[in-house]
Length: 343
Image (cartoon, rainbow, N blue to C red; front, side):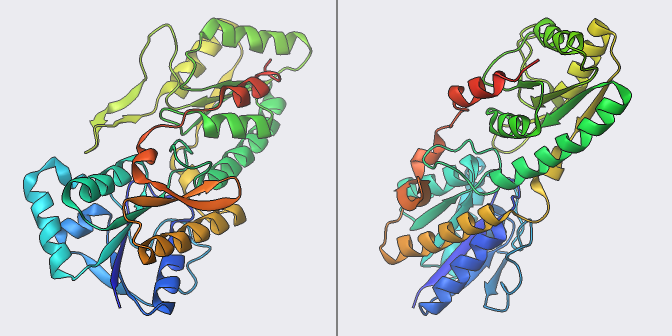
């Protein structure tokens, strides 16, 4: 019998509870104990844990967020923190750990495995779908569905008032959410971090649409999109997390003012923000997350530490965690397909 720890780190994401449920139920069925670590890596540093049972995970499959809590804690930032982490690992008698998270959480997992020799397996998670090593991450499908529904709703008010609607969505470095939801929602222009944009070009697309008799427009912009006039990403208040990431936001408001000033068309801005992370995961994300959780337990049984679950085609396979530390930017072909409908 082994004692398996599980933690969820970074931003919350629809499908996290499905992973937890799968890891717990599969592990218990094999005769192992599972210890839930609260609030990501912070829980292992501070010693906040709880045993997970069949009862603990009953009914959590459709729930958003994570019952274990999360944080953006980097234990390698201070020597004292990493020493506390090691001490608590021994204190709680952990034999191995499942780390569920994105680039930063898995980066810590990789360091602990590679540099310290800790037996850790990973599960990739991000709504942005920007982790290399896997075709898709759970949470992405839910986020796209939420944004698409918002765009559908904004269409009716935009048409009624003959306005331009700017929709700011998540996407720090990659425009997967913006492009998929913009294409699904029939956006007239999509702006992504991978391609700097020119405001005059955006306004020209809007005027072209209006000249055809369509007196409104929908513009979807990822939070990390950058105008070529300033050559910098707009941030909120200069706040930086423990992994050095600035809090983004503001590009939508900036763009909305520019469009209204340059075209004379009334423009409104909607920033969806954390709405994209919340609520019930889609069926696709529940299934993918469940399969990832089962695979994580298989990796532990096979002692494939330093690996993570990954989707390749329709198969769930094992790939080294370090592959997830490389960024997966938007496929240019997908953006080209979306751009056919601009303007």
